[in-house]
Length: 540
Image 1: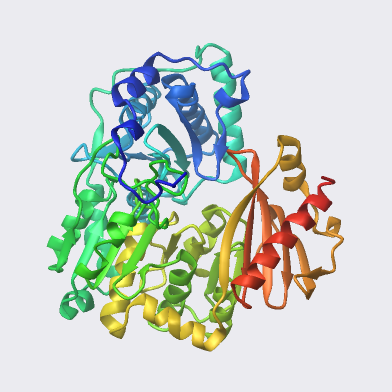
Image 2: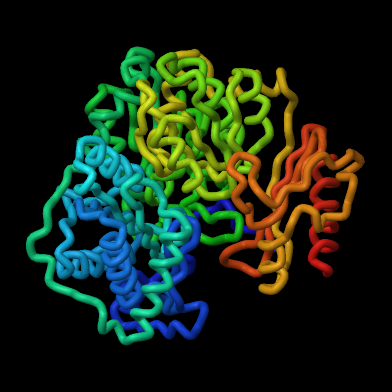
């Protein structure tokens, strides 16, 4: 059967938005069912009202738990809240506002009653707290499931540092929320949010871009830029950026449709707004020749996709390596001791680039929360994930956002093109000429819930293998080298290759990330041996 990946969505692929929203208000979860509990992953609680995993009860309980948590932490300043374009985001924001107002929280919503990208919320928190008193620190909530399918909703908390909450916070919030639901929501306070303060997220964010991106260089170069919001929250931001800085920038698709009927299907034939996916970005890539640079963002604009005329959609790892190389050689005000941050499943090309520019590499587990402290204090100038999420410091070395910023990374690609005269993909080819051309891939392997739990606890010492695809194993890691935190799996390294295995948080599979600087055939050997090594360690 021929895959429909990369082809336009058909009517049979679309959600019934009316039914989805109806079930949000009428469904009631049973928290005795693990599938209906509040569970915070690396980016908050996600689920769908179609399977009673994201409903008014969930959001009311989570918001009440956040109110209690922020009070315990002494957070008494305003709370910034923003929502993306998913169908469940608006009703979830309404629920949250009712609870926040009833609890006396000073809450700020978008001035234009519009959509708010995740990075704009993080930017607002940091901007406020930069001059606020210690007893008046702000925090925030972002209502988004990021790039997840249209049927999903998402809800995440950003404490005063502006980035994703850490596991201690999210575990406490989730546990309390489930307790509240089990208690029949009697601990939830609600009121009509009749008078809520507003905040101009967009203007503050757009006007401040000149402090972190060379907007003048982009304008002076005259490059033709296309920006596709993929129906997400960045839609009005891109036009505002073009207007504010006089750029030759076209919003190639300004349509917002909660069913996302204009999308091409992702690799699994689902609608998913992933700007790093060739299948999801097929319609964008088809227009690569129309612009000097074309970019995409996901629904909450915390991820980026970079499309160039000479290479099409760039692999996220490739672009991160180029961005690091460029930034650390074009930001003279950054501290000479500022480090490069990457997740441990990102390409080793980044390791080679960091070494070549004389910068220390900080390798952390999956999750952007691990970069927050470094971005706040300036000790980490760039933090990036292999899944096309990153942020970096302003020209003066101070924090911009402590959450992923897809708009920022897309604009950086334009700055790179304007300043160097070369596309990011051309610059990546130059890196491969210096350091080699790695082959990188991620595959999934079946695993039971028990096996996934065992993998999450696996110690590197449990791996008995001594070779990986013909090379001696040089490291077996269960903790990240950069901060000693558990990686929730294992990473095995040889001289020219590595693999990492981690359990999926949503499916009965484990993920194998692998890379080889010896080419695609060697990568295939690494992947095959990785599965054997992990299965042996799990006793299967």
